[in-house]
Image (spheres, rainbow, N blue to C red):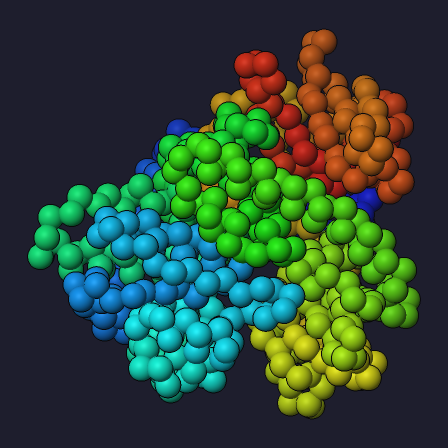
Length: 582
Ligand SMILES: [Mn+2]
């Protein structure tokens, strides 16, 4: 049964809502805890008992953290680093170029500062060296350092790690990428996603694993010396990486993000960045995901991730200002390039994007660092899995895929590998990367289609929109919205609830910024409720909103607007359906 009788919304989705049983359960929770039905519905969805509520809305790292020693090689790795500190060995860090990688390197650097040790940090060039450790770079690092720690990469870098061991350098890998086996010459592999690992922390990003590594190091260290290290001060960075890496916001990750957000403004560099873009007030996970993380990622995409590392470890204002200026410039460049490539990618889609089950676009010499973003945007636009391939001068295609809910890329990737279509490839369910001989792109497209058909066979034709519940327009107030937000942070795996406000009447609407629409809906008396609908111009949502006095059921996310210190509820419109009163 569809929700509110909406079988086909204006975005062609069938609305689905809570069952009677769920509503019944929520009503009783709502009564018991004196919270709104909407909050209670979220508790039911999360399978949370009423006594878990207080702990859930205030997740603490201490309560949710496992014993770090339960991770394979954790103890071995930590002891090796402590020995290196004691013997004053030269230590290097090889980090991935994205936020998770640069944060991971920063966390270790900041911790080592307590012992007056400055590690050499190496971050590969995305364009020239690509992802993960490579043989020449590791060999060179190993000639000058007797310990290398690889962070957010290295789990399947057998050859590169062999390069280091040839120089008698030990390599500790702290990573979260899925891997079948520990590289032969690695001293330690600390990775919740390695084959033999039996713990339940596969959802951590690399910085989360690094944090546990530092917890264990600090515990071991305490027995010997009395360094005052407060690891809770590191949670802003761990939270930042968790959000930037789009890690599921469950379990320990919720504690990282919730506690991290509280202290985000304490670190001078992050404070500067927030202030520069007017983000410091009511800082949310959303602002970090869409405003902070992309800026720090831009340097790794276009230039070198070393800039964002230097920024994250900087403490004096002069350095912070200098590095931030460079980061901002790179971000502007990134935006310009992104626009050019996005337009080209739209023109270069193979076949018919409307009727095909997925999107493949390819072009010559597009920037490798940007194809992931472009694939994500194509996916958003067409609501289908999207692949973007850039072909270099040697006719090698470098591809990036982004998937939609319900399509597992690891299955498709292993099929492509089995059929020898790819030169290399790896990734997660939702995102993957690969290289391919450009002559094989048509085969790639075909096999992808077939594989997708198999996966979608069991699915019904019309897409469902999962709705949280109903709320009358006159009962929406800021208290209710804030109470619902206590159940955040929202993001990967824990989406912001989408509620339906039935029978709304549009009393005002206007296009802003060329593509978005702001509007007002009638409330009792002379009041109105503000709404915003992004990228709605020229689609069915925009058309409906621009019709004055139109009667609509509105599917939306609830927000609080606090423009000039006055708090008001506001809605972000996701979908619409004509209401029965029409
Ligand atoms: Mn990474």
